[in-house]
Length: 387
Image 1 (spheres, one colour):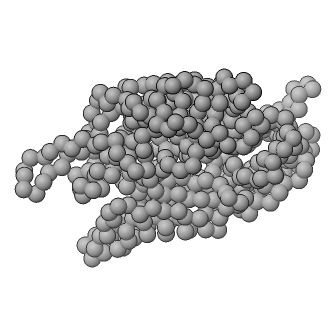
Image 2 (image 1 turned 60 degrees about the vertical axis):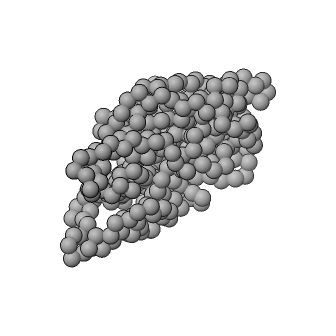
């Protein structure tokens, strides 16, 4: 029990996790989970997809059974799967499902007991161990390749959710056979980049079940309850700061060559997307142009979609960082969804996209760190949901 109305459950096992004995939970010092959405890496010039990470710290007493349960990595069984479930007001929500990849024992000193630290990543880590380069996909459109790759891990509870691109090219198997490059995870991420999409794995809705999403980054939907600043008894945020960085704003440009013209023509990409509507009335000024590479072999529609993806990420010039107490907030703040902000002033109030969320759990304490972003100042809505 963490706090009145909040409880943490741990499931573990070689492949199918089961509830751990009570002494394991009693030995837990802290649990940290970090969830990040896709990010645009300026140095690489492409989208990156950080995995969800976990760090667990336990007291390790003399002859503790924890050594037997968790220090098995590298022997038998080779993988230890961990699932964390937080129950708030009777509603269980999985916040992590993945594998332990590293463990460390820190010997005790005097009255301080030894400590066991476990680190791991979500289910996607299991998709990254084997290189399947060269595996053929004859006559398979991109969506079918994605479903085939995710389907290989149905035994781990992966449920595919895919959104077909607006235009799919099906290669003639007698002329060209598409082949896999790298591991299943690397290939899924590469296919997502080519389509201007994202790929991530999210635990839930039940323990042992995971949503494998491959599609556009969606910034619409029902917002989460508002984060309140400086509102006396209604305040539910411990700290929060805002930043406006116009230097991040760029205008992606694709170069196309019409059939009737030998001269390529530059086409600037506007910030228009049904799935990425403006969350701020005053957009950042795009002072720089960014040439979109690797589009020469794509159709105009495919190149335009790729440009829209880069524009959406470069326009997120308004960011906010902070932390909240889960007990006061009354629920978990979730990444990859919208959330409202109140009490920050006219320029910063309104809706934001939750780019990342961190969970830090200790006995009697549950806090979340977060990073928000949006594509402009001044709210586009008159009010934000409070519950």
